[in-house]
Image (cartoon, rainbow, N blue to C red; front, side, top):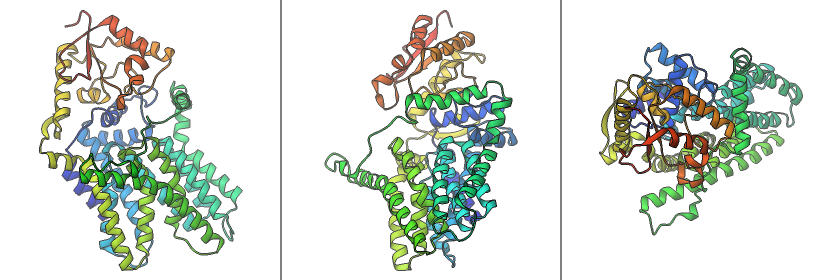
Length: 499
């Protein structure tokens, strides 16, 4: 399984590892990894995901003595291979007789859903949680209760949302284990052991809060802000399959729309039906595959992730309990049922997801151009190439010799500059106190230019001038507009009195 997972991920990396680049989302991860290599602290020193993924990436990049984008992608690919390995292991253990063609087909189905690249940590974490809860169900001893909690705590260091999903799934599994329990710890004892494990696994964050000046306040503020904005993502309308207009879009795109809508529905239906089924089987004293129990209780938490921003990228991050559960169920069926349904699942997966892989995007449109990024030759779309050229031109003219500027997170990583502000990715409205603190940082850093663009999804209320009115006014008072961008979405300003 490890060899198969490694081979599949390596093949994918060789095909598309040097293709595509996002100055926004992937740049957000890349910049954070670079800053951690320089000794900065995620969340305290810059807007960030939870620290785990930065520690992993920075550790690998430090071992390679390289802070470039391809080294970061290598670190992410190793994490991806580990996730795929766990998924294949769960499928393989669902049957007594190994079937390599079926495992290869399963690997293809899983890997085509592993996108976007900067979210492979999240996808792998969801698979790790499935394996973890299956491990507990297989033999619910005291050690495994504690170990399950320990790993949930560790997962939360990489993403607190995954920690919460792990908590929800663990509670469901522990409750299920205590239906007609004949062995193992009781519910109270098991929960206590599991809770102790969670605390132990999350201990690095506790130590950081105690020992790293300013981290505790910043970490708590990041939690409080989520309650303030009452969301973790900018929501999108759910793409229900009946909303697809076959008359106005090409047939292949219409079919893709229907499949995406059905998969959104399936993430919920699978969770509800499998929970009812495994609970019924438990009351009947019938055995259920551990992996199926795990996917049952994780399907609904991860459906929440998919629906939080109902696009294909978030569906990909929330679909793996459904995929692994279906592949485990099919592995147990006779060949006349298993193969047709597995091939249908593979076809649907390829139909939906292939166009979102950068390797396919460069292959099909034949428009990707070569760009040098951090010493590596990457193939990117013409729009990204123009943006990179624009940033380099602006930095050369208005922020030379390492001077700071305000732009997208990937721009800082690309040019190896420190962001003058904490909020490197502007999405939500902020308080006046926050804006005033950011203005003081801008005053101290004296950036050479500022680049802002239109808000995500085109919401007028989320324009920078509406979400950050004080900073916007400060920019108007202290910077001059530059009409040098061919993209009307970009607003570029240079410092008054600058070059």
